[in-house]
Amino acid sequence: MRAEGLEKVTMRRLAAELDTGPASLYVYVRNTAELHGAMLDELVADLEQGAPAGKGWREQLIGELCAFTELLFAWPSLARSVLVLRPSGPHYLGLIDRVLGLLLAGGVQERQAAWGADILLQLATATAAEQGSRDESVDAAGEEQDLALAVAEAEQHSYPNVVRVRGELLSGSGEERLRWAFGTVIDGLRQAG
Image: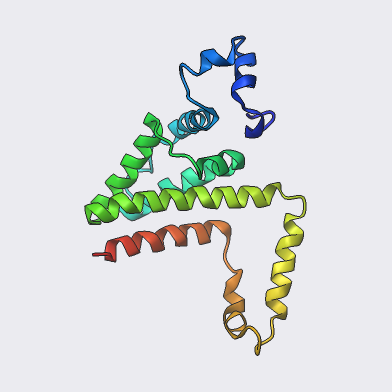
């Protein structure tokens, strides 16, 4: 996966690397999607040290979610794959447990915490998949410039709301926007009844 990307990680190729037949791999994983889930689970194991002590539950949770997102930034094709599968390995389950624990420590009700953990991890995964796809694009910088130019040249009579907030529309660093997104969802979960 490191050398050629996730697209090249197939049951057949893995079997060849392990000097066995693809059929023998199906004893351990049912399909390529499950293989991708196992790969994610191994990567998530590196996150298990958790956020540094001394921070409040909200900052710990945002830190945990940012770390997961950053991990997936390094593997955009895996992030895209994870969007359509349900990881269930022990390390991923540990990540879910830590997210739930922090939400519950913050006073989020159980149902909101359970559903919120799903939304927060989906946001992390989708952000990494989207940003990773942009980073792989040959003309990513050009596309970003095109959007900035379109926003700058938007006319009041056609796009009054874009003009109204144009100074903020593309403001902030990626990390600032990511932390804001997680914080906004977390705050909403606390308010939900």
